[in-house]
Length: 223
Image (tube, rainbow, N blue to C red; front, side):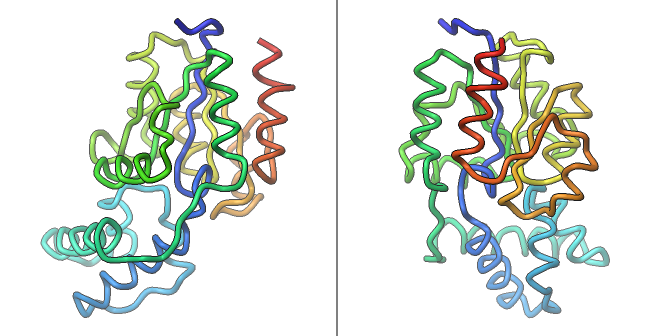
């Protein structure tokens, strides 16, 4: 039984896991497989956080549905099976999750990853045990649509004012705004500080220790 009724929802890539290099390398490999026009690293990092379908539409706006589907398939192949680029939790993440879980808070993930990819990294990092529910972009509308957050809150019976969304992109924060949920930005991911602050989060923190301290001092203990 959750004692606080507080729900903390984390984005995954760029918030809990340092996976930017792997995502970019997998996308680059998928593009090369299909002999598509190359995209810059900046272009590829800009779409991290979106669902794959939405990302493909931005990267190749003139592409056909068949081309987008092929790119999605090749990206998933490289990410799940072929690519060996390391992607690890940011230092201190597991200790933070264990602490929050022990305190009795509801923990969740709302991610632009597909279900297969998220399940794999949860297993690899042995962190699935900490989350009460997870939602992926291939199960609902992609960020910044509020559906993932709404489904998480409905499933756990938690109201918007008892929920906090944490993420490194404007897509995370816009999703929170669209759901009527307060948000906290982290500046160590893919979007710059100005873009994050434009979404009016409660605050912005610069690393995992600062995130852990903020949750303990300004959110968890303040409830």
